[in-house]
Length: 418
Ligand code: IZC
Ligand code: ZN
Image (tube, rainbow, N blue to C red; front, side):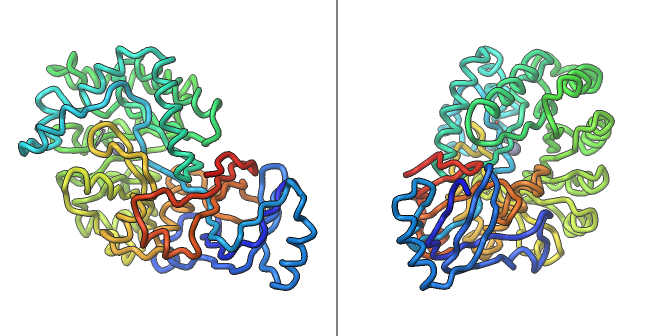
């Protein structure tokens, strides 16, 4: 064994290698007085200890550097943030005053700001600057307990700048501990130079971006901002079906601001996940359930835009697997904090702590095609886990605003000791 975690007060984890739907989402494994053995970066065993045996073996291993005494604390899988716009140049603090004056997210975008401002700044930045900025963000993310991360392009909106962003994402995956899963999102907005020729931009995505990105294997997923005044459901269908020809798996920003049928498109093109879903209709929810599309809900965005919260309970009741993520981006969700996102999911979606735990681990992993390796603490899975400064699961949903992660283990190695 390379590492043993002893004296775990409560080990809370979902189990399995697939997204959990309906009532299954709250059926997590809770083992008191547990021990975890780790070898070669993977979990070798999980067991419940007889309390007398556990205290004896603690004594025996007292001087071993390969043993961590968890001192009765809570242990969970590392968090999976399945929806982020990690790599960008520039922040958008100038938009705060506009928001306070009552300008909406789409007003700001349609007057040339919002995403388009970030595109300008991202195009100006060189790869090294973006890498440095991304690395600083990921260091914060890791300290907050996230061990697997999705990152989208979509602030380049030209062949060269989309490739630049995706290369930065690849570099970050290789050079720091968090696993980063790349998504191509050239269809994030129509760039200014194509303002009068949106079909020309869609052709550029289809004829140049998709083939180049696929050839260089720079992304696993293709996402699109299907929204009023951004991309229509028809355009979304067309681009996502083209992406599938290159084995890029569809994802879709759906029904965030207006209910234009994004969830239905997700089901139709067999997307792995649909994101936001604030305004999704009953038929949309049914379609997601039927096609087993994971709903990636983003409560920090509802909070920040002062919008309604997605109908998580209706989705769970309809048999949709729900994941929860930060949507970290410089406009609608300028926070890296998955723990705060978990608090919001619990309080605003009325999801139970067990449901949210599944949403930010196994279901998050399923939304980015990683449920075989991440998202639970079971023999054979990668050893990504957190020791919390907490005695039980409810505590981390009840308290908020501080970082409750004590230790982060990634691939069997202690990478953070707070
Ligand atoms: O930069 O505003 N919603 N895309 C869709 C975003 C938010 C990111 C941004
Ligand atoms: Zn997003």
